[in-house]
Length: 390
Image (cartoon, rainbow, N blue to C red; front, top):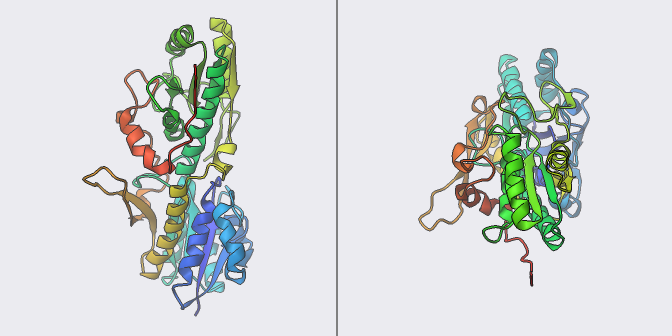
């Protein structure tokens, strides 16, 4: 029997998802017993339809482009696997002599990872080892300190907010509301705080879904800032909820796993116009934030590669039913150090990690210095410094 590897992507891509794929391919070169490194074309459906490509057939010159290619070079999906299909997968893996299956994705993919592991055990395919590679810009996978994809999304939003802030400051006549991705977790919205160089810099207000959103408090805060500054920059998460837990804006579409939120930024901007009579506009970067290689975090890219390598290392050592996890090491000088470990997959399957209370200020309209300290190393080098003569 051969010792082949199969990587499968699941869920929304990131700016560094392909970097993890590259890490797997590179690590495979350290193990002579591994013959093929397959990629499932189009996500989980690629396994079921047996659409596999051997990535070791491509030259390094082409493979190295994975490091600067956003999205998924092999394709991804949100395909809902049935129980019958789970039971089919072990035999397909055995047919292609795949010993190491490495699903790369977020919460839903890690749930799938665990179920495929269970299916392999129940079917008696004990030689197949399953190790998950974490991926999500939302940073909402449990246990792990952070996930590959988040650092780049955070860097993109912080940089974009910093640029928009200069525009608003130059012509301080309106309120600008910027919407951040993140579903039920406010990690991305919170990362906009890294746009600030000094106290008083934009973003002036940050709203995350971990706290109920109060329209009257929002309008009060905006009015005070507008009267003092003229131009106000607000960052709001797409998943904002009211006191009763209902979304601020009704979702336009829902599935079992995915929620397609309404336009929160437009709603808040219109609220400012109608209630305060102040000019306001909305900005919704959306997919730009997870596809931007121009603002890719070098730390994120490096750790994504390491995550791919570590997943294969764990599998080769005999670990299965695990996910690669990031652990932040305590250092005496406050510097950033990280180590990787294997987390039992049942501890992360569909468990959502949200911003802790210690990262949100008392009023719920900003983040704390503790969050900034935690997030700062993940986005890489300092953002460009701007000049202001006013």
